[in-house]
Structure formats: C-alpha cells, structure tokens
Amino acid sequence: MAIRVQAEDFDVGAELAALSDGNPSIGGVASFVGLVRDMSKGDGSGDSVSAMTLEHYPGMTERQLAAIEAEARTRWPLDGVLIIHRYGRLLPGDRIVLAACASAHRAAAFEACWFLMDWLKTKAPFWKQEETPAGARWVAAKEEDDQAAERWYKRAP
Amino acid sequence: MRILYFAWLRAKIGTAEEEVAPPAGVATTGDLITWLQSRGPNYADALANRAVVKVAVNQDYVSMDHPVAPGDEVALFPPVTGG
Image 1 (cartoon, each protein chain N blue to C red):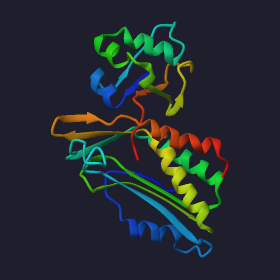
Image 2: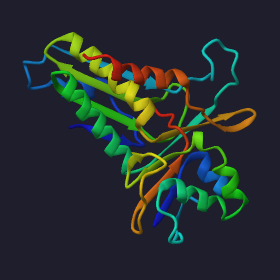
Image 3: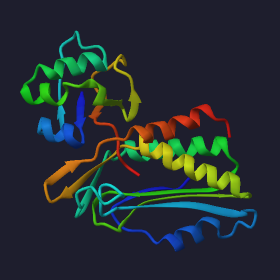
C-alpha cells in the first residue's frame, strides 16, 4: 500500500519508476497528475487564481485514500498502486496529486487510475481555497464529479 | 465528544475543534447538528443548509441518523474538493 499525504512536491519520474522497479510481471503503469490551474475556468472567462490552499483532515484523509486503494485492488488485478496528495499553499502549475496503477495489462491500469481519481475527488477530505483578485473563496464541489464517481457503482469492471 | 470543523464551516463557526458535552437527548448526528445550531448565530448560519454539511464519526462518513456517543470524534465539513 502506498498512500502519501504531504506538503512537499514529488518527482513523478522517480515515483513511477519506483512503482514498477523489481517486478517484471508488470506490463504497464498508468498515471494521472493533477495541477493547480491559473484560471478558475478553462475558457479564460474566470477570475485569475494567484494561489490555492489545500486543507485536509489528517487521519481521515489517509484512511479514505487507503479504502479507495483497497477498493481498486478488489476490482482490478493490480501489482502496484500509488496515491500522493499534497496540502498547503500551492501556486499555478504546481503538482497537487499523483495517482498511478501498475498492472500486467493496460486496461486494468488505465481503468483503475481513472477510478482512483473519480473516487478521490468525492471521498477524500480535502478542500481548496483559491486566492483571486476579489479575495479568497472556497471552491464549490461539482455535480459532474459526483456523477463521475457514481458511474463506478453502476459499471462492473 | 470532540467536534472538528473544516473549510468554510470552520471559518463561519470560528473554531477548528472543540470538546462538547451535549445533553442526554442528543443521540444521533442529526440531533447533534440541531443542538449545535442552538449554540449561537455563527453555528446557526454555518449549519443552516444540511445538504452541504457532510458528517464523519471516528473518521468514517456517516448519515444524519448515525448514533453519537461520548468519546466520539465527530467532523463536520462541506462537500470535498480535492484531487
């Protein structure tokens, strides 16, 4: 099990290499890296975000991430799972999260990685506060994130 | 009983955590929120819309009818926005 909740940045290349090193039965590693975006909306219409602070619930965060990893392992044949999630104040372009899954075949690795991110978005107790020219504001949860997580209940792998 | 608040709930209530001793009639998470709302305008305001209040007891998500007991760690927070 590899769950890390930390303020520090991480080295994506080194983390992915470590996930598969020494296990030649792994055929592939799928990963997702989440970044702080400099605009609140991708179309450029939102207020600029100069920084973001991530708050979390120490203890429950690790517990929920471990539960999400355990659920992924029951659904797909995985040889390695890694979730790193940062907290504290981050700037646009900074890495927030890394989710990676190693498996013999790509389908399991891709699907499990997507699942980790969808469940993490709706279950891991993190909250984002953005700094904008108009002041600080808490990011609201998105309906589409709930829907993205829901589909994994309906669909068997 | 230890109560933890996060994100805008913490900001509105004005504290991150507190020890409370609710009266005997407070048996569930829903009862606890109703009781907390009576403790002042900051609580009443923060907890006014229960649709945006999530509850965890001893670090697991629970519903509004989950039992609470002395010694529990109860956390109240808005829908999560990590990832």
